[in-house]
Image (tube, rainbow, N blue to C red; front, side, top):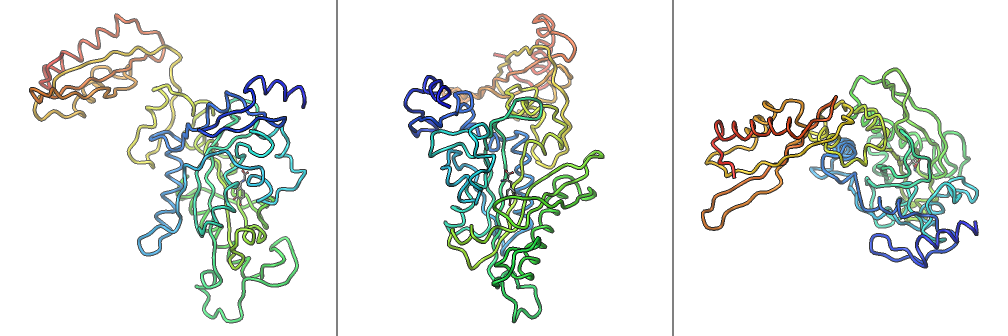
Length: 413
Ligand code: DAH
């Protein structure tokens, strides 16, 4: 530990700044500059990123299926900073003192009071305390791990929590007199000591049917699924939901009936609730056939452009991008009356075919004197099997310029 602490101080000196806040380093500090580079990237909020598509599939499911009048029941929180206290990440969730995730080898510590959250559950108690009964929380989480095709020390989760008052939980029961949420009972495999059997069973049923429907919404209505018993310090009972994907059982999420002690510490001990946590990367990899988790961090347009869809439910099968280099050329022209961008995109695709990886508008200019508009587009060319020479690209690029002038009436600048 001591030698590690010394080396960390060499990395940061006496303090480290994370998204605008300064933290003193100490012997616990084990975050690295490389990891801190990821803080604030918020891939889940980046439009048309596969993790953003995944997150919207989940969010849309809750928005469309849980409504009070016209208002979604679940509020959504997607920019809560990932630096949390150890108390939030562990103690507030009843993680035992010897829980493996507390080890400095498993989590990223900013210092002995703060860490990068290891799961979005870290915010459960505080969100409930602030008065929320139903919420989704989307965020980046950090765990020390090897890096390979399926492991990366930063990934993304969606957390969901749903609380019920006595009246809400029993609202569909014909005669709820005599039913109660709580009793002074015994803990069994099926319930906590303080919950009555009927409240535990109703919460379990509401949770399981909601989450099964969500899995169907994401992976299709015909998929097979099953519930597997699990253990989490913050829920009892706890389960994992698995689905059959391409012949193999795939774990989709963890969930359970929230420990009443956590609700109590949030000041909502008159309610009961369920919670779940779902990791986005693994699911997106299965759903889109993305072979390597590192690709989510790729800035390569060959990766990103494959997820450029307007409807988040569009089926996408990722095609490996070429190992060969890109070549990018710009084209600028004055727009004629009635110009349509999509006509230009089609023309580029028609001439360039699969050699065109991406076309994007990089500049939109209006001449203040003449009020004429001009556009500049960047066209990225890449061949799947070989390195394109600039000469080969120029031939195609000139053909695009020529035809844009002839067919669309643009005036090349
Ligand atoms: N936090 C858990 C994890 O990262 C996932 C999880 C399990 C979240 C059960 C929950 C839950 O809210 O109830 O592995």
